Length: 403
Image (cartoon, rainbow, N blue to C red; front, side, top):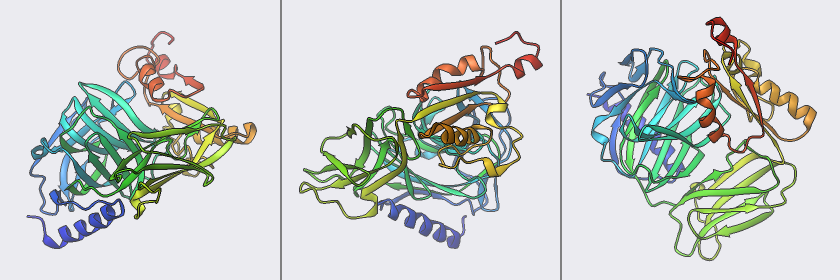
């Protein structure tokens, strides 16, 4: 049995986090793994390798490397809660303790290996991503080019209500999405290499007012001077809506979900977008969760994608001091943050250089090769303008014909 003292401490921490997001619900399930076992969890793998899950020192740890890919989507191993397959609307909170640089994350509305949503973070390639897998096919719902600091734990909170998905990282709103593909399912803990998980809590959803900007995400770029905006909002009062504000100057209110609109003739440079839930009189709803702000949103910008193998992804990059560009848009290993800084200096417009490198891959067809990844990577970066493609080292070392 788990000890009461740690359970109480863990739940207090989760309650404080959820309170900051406007969430107060009955606890449907919790596990702090302080009882020394993982009863109720089932281990799965998606690719080659042998999973190594074990409860150690009050957390659920996965120790082996299972770094696999389906096109440009990362797979590995996961453990899911077997008794939650009929859960529908809920708030999931999980503490993740990374111990490697590969992808780690949480799954939700998990039904089977072909149907689930997933939020994952990756320090090496440098991203946070919200994805779905339906009937075996992956699709990206939201992403950025910032790999969180893997030297410390992170708390992920997923708030689900109908087709609305709100993602919080360390208590801060990160992604919002509206998707009706999967309406029920359990939760899972995903890892490609060493990582630990703790303080898993599932609460019933609430009706509190909360909003997360879904477009544009913080630290993103828009190639033109038109800035499309959208937000996922819950608990909007009758007659109310979501008010979008640009740089605390221009604003408009959309009263119909899904809440969206656009700002035109936006000047070159970085901007701030705010979304706030308002009532029928146009008054902002109280509470920090009823407002969200996304910063460092560049317009009239340049959008680069670097696609390649380990040279792009940054294998053996041993200088941590250059893993983040000065504007913080690109946080990864490899050359992409450095190139961002150089381009920003010489082009003098907002720049992003997204890292789509996967170590060990070839140019040719099959597996996670460059040819097989083109379609899914293009779809993820639909607004990109420039591509930096580098393959051939692994083809040559394996005696393969030129890509």
